[in-house]
Length: 396
Image (tube, rainbow, N blue to C red):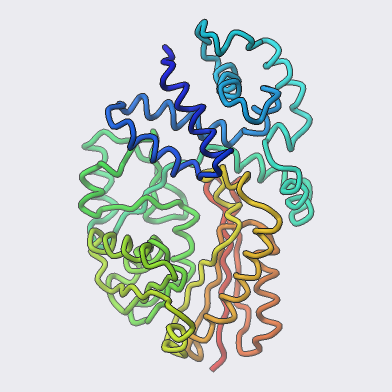
């Protein structure tokens, strides 16, 4: 492939935004693409793939470049690894491709470097999951996340949906155990697809779809999605309830709920009410009201590193400690909304027991009116994102 200096420079500059200015990769790329509206899809794809792959393998590529901040050289390492011929540019004159590949081979036995994880996170993973499980998951989390769609049964059914995509010559793969989830055979921007604009589907990982199914809402239920964000799970709950019953979608961030309102309109989900959590009084107003409360709490995000690889570099032991305190506060404060005989579902996109089962155990030790029913963990090595979900029941 032919390389263009402006595109390679954009990769290096975006890496600077991420690793020096501490921006998230998706936001840095969004800013770059807005500044360059004339770029075609091929140019954008080249930059996005390069940036995400370098972020995913930042420790390894930095080691091979012998620098953490020379982003042109780190980009050159990526080009060498991908077997893309380097042009005779001045910036590449000191790149020794043979040496880079030799060193990469030698580092295969140094897994924290080869798989690109900070030492503290690697050690934490081993401590919580054991060596074999952590190594398997750490490798699995470095695979590129597939694009999974959730068929919106409020607008269509699976057969119609599959036929419509076939007519557009877009390849899909059905996912075992997920009734309305399909995976794109080839990556593409489905947000421009006419069927997306008509509300026929949402982009939602297969693991994430399991959470709303785990809640198991009935059409007569009042369900509170108390950490709703932009409402991906609320929309799925609405489809599972066939637009019946009532869903209260709550969040402390009003702008996220504004996004949810747009999505509900597109999806035809009319049983959802968005509610900003302004203070503790918002929660108290719903005391003993909900049949089901879903708490998809803030977490480290370790289970979704496939699609958010810069989380590896943004996380710290300090930030994780604060997050665990917040998790415990949310579950303790928000559980009052469950009515007697109702159910509470606690979920995270983490695979660490300290954010999952241990948090539930701690909660139950101080809340005798709740009992454990069941839990499950989906691991990234299974092919999709990693999640934990646990069902608790409130006594009558």
